[in-house]
Length: 140
Image (cartoon, rainbow, N blue to C red; front, side, top):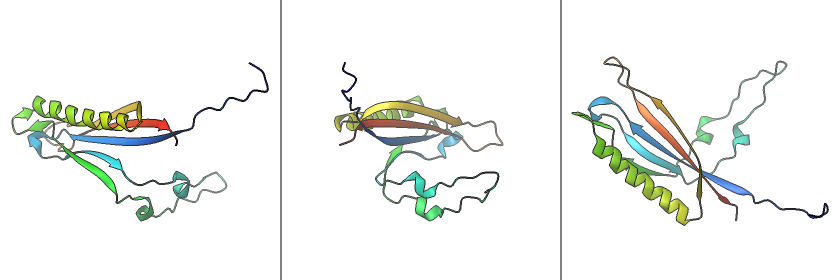
């Protein structure tokens, strides 16, 4: 390759789909798949702090919130009898449907990240399993 030949690399855009699945006993939680239909520029809500300038970020939370998003209902992992494997399978097919739909629009699944805040006994009524699906496609 000639050293004067420039190679143009593609520029990607990214989209995040977040799945929140309840792991609260007795099926009391809410499970959803969420994807935003708005954009935000993180720089609008970012400040730099240093030892000399340690003023806290004063971004308005209302400016950060989005009101236009897609919300898909999912089933909870638990019902009154305990863990419900049928609900997990149902969520899998709904999430897979979303992934297939995104793929048909040119999005490629690039990263998957998950985390859990699990039920830790009778005194803990909290529990969610969160999975973030990060898609990318060449910017048009």
